[in-house]
Amino acid sequence: QVLDPAFRGPFGNVTRWFLTCLNQPQFKAVLGEVQLCQRMAQFDAKKFAESQARKEKEKEPPRKGEKGEKGEKEPPRKEKPPRKEEKRPQPEEELDECEQVLAAEPKAKDPFAHLPKSPFVLDEFKRKYSNEDTLSVALPHFWEHFDPEGWSLWYCQYRYPEELSQTFMSCNLITGMFQRLDKLRKNAFASVVLFGKDHDSSISGVWVMRGQELAFTLCPDWQVDYESYTWRKLDPGSAECRALVAEYFLWEGDFSHVGKPFNQGKIFK
Image 1 (spheres, rainbow, N blue to C red):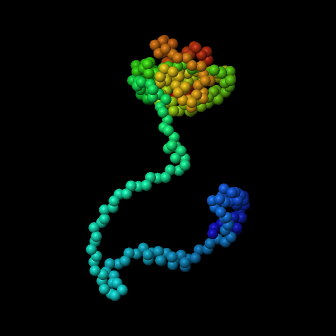
Image 2: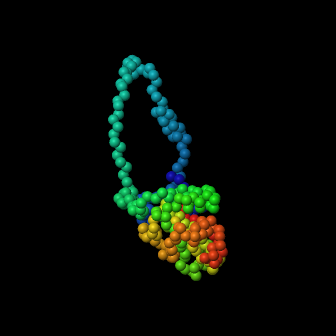
Image 3: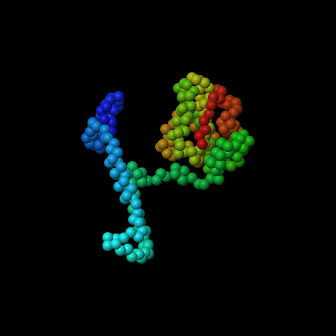
């Protein structure tokens, strides 16, 4: 009873779009036939006042001491003790189809459940790396607590540097890989760096992973990008490993093995 033809006049395009929607089978299945308003409802002050008066009267509680039909006061009623309501078990909420499918799926197994416990707490190192000085606090903490039996260090290098063009696109490669590895964050840390400039760049990085093998093979979802890189396991006791960890975690150093200047880096944590 609103939006009559006169009102809809200036909105021809909107009306046409609305009618197009209404004539779609999907809309008809839910709404049925819809008739547009021909005459807008008029406000009737008298009817409104009467309906309001009725509502107010219904809300009024009966007055105390009012006489009944025979003019006699009603005797006071004895108050009954309140009944103790027994708690009934509430019915379980019905799940929709999507929730039923999710509930029926087996819980995902931890890919690292087969590994023994390690004293190295990766989250503690990540907090040091994020909140304190890397050179004076985070790196000493890392080497003091690193467990070479429960964790491993890897050097990676992008296989196809000749295909890298704009540096922002190369950074998107790194970011996209990190996003697809989101569920690996509790068991890995990495610093991946882009070197060089537009049309002359390379990507390489250092990874810390749970276990002694590449973690990407433990889950199909983690295998999208890793084959685009070469991987070399590092010896935690070697000078080379210490130098690479320092350079990549600090984003500072000669990076003599690369041959290109540092451009920017990304941290997986």
